[in-house]
Structures are given as C-alpha cells and as structure tokens.
Amino acid sequence: MNISQAKNLPLPEILTRLGHSPVKVTKGGTEFWYKSPFREEKDASFHISIGRAGFWIWNDFGDSGGTVIDFIMKYHNLADVSEALQHLDKMFHGSLLEPMKPNKAPQEKEHDLFSFHQQPPTEEEAKQLEFVSAAPLTNPIILNYLKNERCIPEKVAKRYVQEIRYKNTKNGKEYFAFGMQNLSGGFEIRAASNQHPFKSALNGRDITIIKGTHPHKGIVNVFEGMTDFLSFLVMMQYDQLTGDALIMHSLSSFPKAAARIAAEGYKTINTFLDNNPAGLAATERFKESFPEIVKPYNASYAMYVDLNDALRDNAPSISR
Image 1: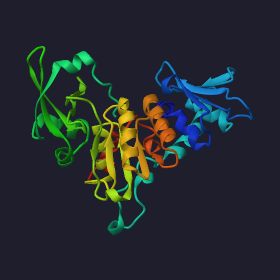
Image 2 (image 1 turned 180 degrees about the vertical axis):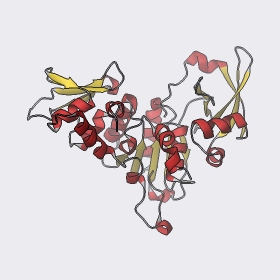
Image 3 (image 1 turned 135 degrees about the vertical axis):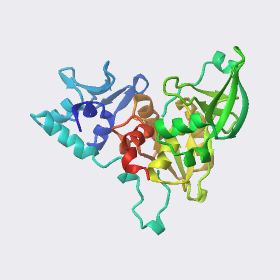
Image 4 (image 1 turned 45 degrees about the horizontal axis):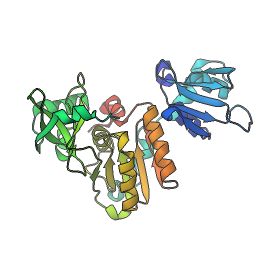
C-alpha cells in the first residue's frame, strides 16, 4: 500500500475495525463524531470529515488532526510513515474477496453473500425523455463498453440487463443505453460511455428486485446500482445469487427499499454500498432501520469507492 492509497481509505471503517462507533453523524453523512480514541471522555470531541482534497481527515479537540496516516501514527504511537502503511496494509490485506467467499467445499457452496451512486434526473429532464423499446442486449458498443471499461463479461451482461432505446422529445433524437426494469414498470438506464456518464429513469424511478434461487432463506443483498450488482457476480464467479438482490439505482430510493425489505420480512440484509460519504451514510441508515439483521460488506472493498472500482483494479486476478 502506498501513501496515496492509504489517504483514500475510509476513516469511518478504520475506526469501526478498531472498536470505535460514532456518537452522531452530521452534515448528511460527511461528518462523524466520536468519543476520542486517544483518551477517556464523556462527550464526543473527536470528529472526522471529508477534506477539500477529497479524502477523510480527523480533528481531536481542535489541537491535533490530519489524514488517515497521521491517525494511525498517533493511535499506534509510530514515528515512521512506512510503519503506518504496514499497519494499514495488514488491516485491509486480503479483505477484497476473502470475507465474502463461503467457507465450504465446492459441492456444498452456497451463494448467500455476496456505484454507483446516481442522482435522479430533474423533473424537467425526466419530462423530455420518452421510452421507445426494450430488447435483449446485442449492441456491440454497449457490450464492448461493459467488457472493456467495466470488466463485465457478455454472458453476465446479457442475462441481467437489456438494451433500451429512448427519445428526447425536445430535440426528437433517439438514443440507446443499457438498463434494468424496476418494480414500477419503468427502466433505469445508463449510457455506455465514461466520457458522458448519463444515468436516468424512464417512466418513473423505483428499485429492482431480482429473485434468488432460494428465496425461502430470507436473504436480501442490497446494491446501489446495476454495475455494482453485475460486478459482484463476476467477482464471486456466480451466475445467480441464492438470496434476492435489491438494486436501489439511487440512494434516494431508500424509503422504497426499506418498505420492500420490511414487507418481505427478510431475516438477513447484506449491503454492498459505496465507500463515499453518501454510501457510508446510507449504510448507517440501513443499520439504524434494521438493527441486528444488517451485515455491511463495504469493508471488503474498503480501498475502493465501489464494487466496480474493485473489480476493475483486480480483474486480472479474479476473472476466469
């Protein structure tokens, strides 16, 4: 692990692994308050937040603070940065896949376990988009994008996403994208382009439920977006999950996701949300709404923003 990777690690996850839980979360999930991990105290004076550089920073009662590296050096009383990097490497080494792999013989293996975060379109933008058609995925542009840019094989893509055509009623032009149908009968779509990462919903935004092979087990796996779900299947070399998959498509869909989970009476909720402030805040929201049955797995890819980032960085070693 190098300095840049260390600075981008999620400090809330590091504190959790060290046995410290936040007393409160403020500013929309971008600021966490703790009782100081350096001393005994009654009121929380230690807080962490996202700094201007885009990574987590901490401040202890106004007299000390810094980056993830600075925190580890003070917490473990280290004098050298390389020692701090070694501590962090041990803390996160092997966590990408090992905690998620079932510890069973191949013939007994279960598939119980195992974004992107997208903002919904404005009301005006949604009015300009008109659904045209949905068909099996055959467009080579989409297939090449998913394979080469997202590391999603054609077989997996064709099984779970469709080729969507839609029209902009303002300019009359027709476009294509890949997408999934949601519970309201609408379609959540994404353009096959990193330069123009357009995402939207046609005919209404909602969550998507993909039933598992053994729904009676009472397990639901929650993903932020399509590519997170597909990435997980590729990483774990699964064709289908044992438990249900719930794809939010947007963190604004939390109320619908929570209502569906409560209605179905799931006994276990595995979450695979992003490691950015919004994703971490959403994970906390699930834990608060469903205490005792939520199992967050974002720590398994803590060095990355989301599952697809982890897949792309590790594709040579995990793709077969």
